[in-house]
Length: 104
Image (cartoon, rainbow, N blue to C red):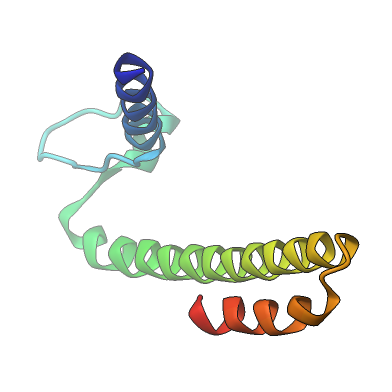
């Protein structure tokens, strides 16, 4: 069981590592080795512009994530409400759903 948990953490860390963009500075006298390298190597004067661009993308992604997280929370509450109503606990259904929304 512990080995499965450790493997899950390792896979998650590896996924984060693979999704991380690595940028490097372009040193004077260094030759270009291709188009792909131009995307990830920056001249020192390009750093502030790239920082603004990536920071904007980060906040847009966080906003999308928070919206999706809210939708998931809403759907989980709706699913729970349906289960309670199917089990004929109608009088508890509305109060429990209200309570769960307030707690989250």
